Image (tube, rainbow, N blue to C red; front, side):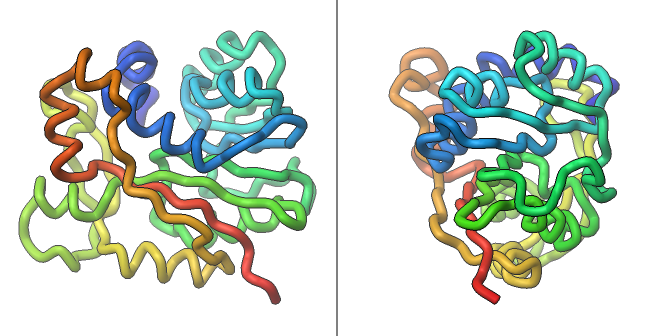
Length: 228
């Protein structure tokens, strides 16, 4: 979906309120100390998370379905990361079992029809003691924007931004359904975070800051494999 507007989105995400000052701090905060860890950046986009993870001492691999994004990410990370073009709807055949300490999946899970299969595949590559950190749209945000029943589980076609022609298809679903998918894939929730905007946003993007202080746009999780 993003291939059509990849360059526009990359420029936007690098410094935007919702990306740079909201989701990235939340996800990287849940990731914790990554120095010396092997991290897989699933749906790596233009490499904004990957570069930060590298700068914090991680070994980084990852993928994205957009060739343009992967090219940007490789350039942004200076060849320090193993990033490949790959559709996460299919298995990560080149990644061995239990080979990754941390998986990051930022703002992408809601695009997939079979989310449980994807989560199971990410669980497969996690080493013992590993974790999956992911973010997705907060179900309350979708309900406030789209109306109808909060409990609807259905794909929605809309623009990623109301000010731009960035068409996407993403699933709206209640928190109960999100958590049930984690359990079905063999994960437990170690931490759930409804992010608060960083203070810098109040200065640079005061309207966004005020809105996000009233109601969350995203929700982030740190998941760990359930014991079998």
